[in-house]
Image (cartoon, rainbow, N blue to C red):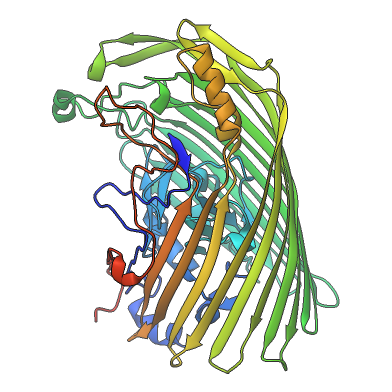
Length: 598
C-alpha cells in the first residue's frame, strides 16, 4: 500500500478521470402516501444537518436526502440498508448481521470516510471509526434520517469526506402515547419494538426499546441486539430549553456470514460456514444534554456529552492471515458550543460561531490465536482456537479543539450565499505497554511496537455555497467543500503484521508518518417538485489526496517491485477543462410503490 498525493479514484468496473459527474435523478418521496401528497406539498422541506439547526432545504447549498419519521415507521427496517438506501446516491450493504458498509460518493468501503451522527453529535470519536457503527443506533425507531452527500468537514470536522448520516431522535409526545410491535420470521427471527411517552408544552419525555434475535440463515451467523433510548425535553423561562438524550446499544453477533465456499458447497450446502468461531460484541452508550437560550435574534447552544464504546472482535476476515482477538474501547467527554446571531434587516444575514471540544481516552488489547483447522486452501475449515500471547497492549487518548465560523446572507430575495471555515487541532497521546521494537508469538510472525509518542494534526477546512430560487418549488445551488480525515488509532499504532522483525519495525515507523486524507468537492445541483414527486439533479467533482491506495504489481519479476509515491496506480489527468476530461454519468432512479407515477 502507498499514500500519495495522486488524485486517485478507482472503482471496480470503470476508470474515472479527475472530473466525475454524477446525475442522480431522484424521483423519490417514499414517506408520502398518495392521499397525503397535496397536503404535504404545502410544507417546506427543512434540514438540521447543514447548520445544526432547522433550515430550509431550498436555501441549503448541499445535496441532502431527508427520510421522514413516517417512512421509518412504515418500513420498520431490520437493517440500515432497508431505509438509508432509499436516499438516491446513498447505499448501505449488509456484511454480517447488522454489520454494513456504506457507499456515498465512494465505492463500498470499510475505510473511515463517513461521519455518523445522532442529533448532530458524532456517535464515535475521531480515530475510533467503525464502518459498522450505524448498528450502535436504534434506527428502526428513529425520528428521521438526513444523508449529506459529499464532504461536511467545515461544520463537523474529521471523517466527513464521502458523506454524513445524521439519525434524529424522535420527539416526545404532548399526551400519553404508547406503541408495541412484535415481528416473527424465519430462521429464528424475533423482534420486539416498544415505546411510550407523555408530556405537555413545558415538559415531555419518550422512551423506546428494541430487542432482536435471529439464528441467521447460515450456520453460526445469528445475533442478539438490545438497544433503547430516552429523551426528555424541558422548557425553562426566558426562552431557555433543555434536551437530554440517553442512548445505548448492545450487539452480540456471530460474523461468519462472509465465509467463502467452494463451488460444490455453494451448490449443495450453501448454509455451511467455514469460519464458525468468528464473533463481534459491541456496546455503546451515549448521554448528552443540549441547553439553548434564544433571545431576540440570538441563540446560545451548549451540548456537553459523554460516550462509552467498546468492541470485542474475533474477525472472520483475518482468520486466514492474522488471527487475533482484539478488545478496543474508548470513552469521550465533549462539549459542542455554538452562538448564532441573525440580522433580519441586513440582507437576512446570519452568523454562527462555535467550538467543539473532545477528549477521548481509549486503548487496544489484542491477542494472537492458535487455530485448529481441517482441510486446506478453499476448503479450510476453522474448528477452534486457543490464545497464544498478547501482541498489542496500549492506551491512546484523542484530543480535539475545533473552532468554526459560518455566515449567510441574501443580497436579493431569491439568492442565498453561505460560507464557513473550521480549524481542527487534533492529537493522539500514545502509551505503549510494550517496549519499542517487536513482539513475536511464533516463527515468522512479528508485530511492530512504536515508542510512546504524541501525534498532532492541524487542518483548516473552508466551504462556500449559494442557492437561487427559480420558482416557488424549484431552486439551484452550487457549493465548494473541503474535507479531511485524520488517521485512526489503528492506522497509526497498529500496523500490519510482518514476516520479519525488520519489516514489522519498518511498518511501525511508516504508520506514524501517515498524513490526513484530504478531499475537495465542487457541486452543482437543481432540486424541486413535480406533481408531488421531488427530484434532485447533481453534478459534482470530488478529488481525494493522500489516500491509502492498494494495488497489484503486474510487472515482471526482474522489474522493481516498489512503486514511487509520485506515480499512482490509477493515473488520472489534471482537471484543466471539462472538455479534456472523461465524463462519467451515473443515473439512479429511485421510485417506491408508494410514489405517484409520472
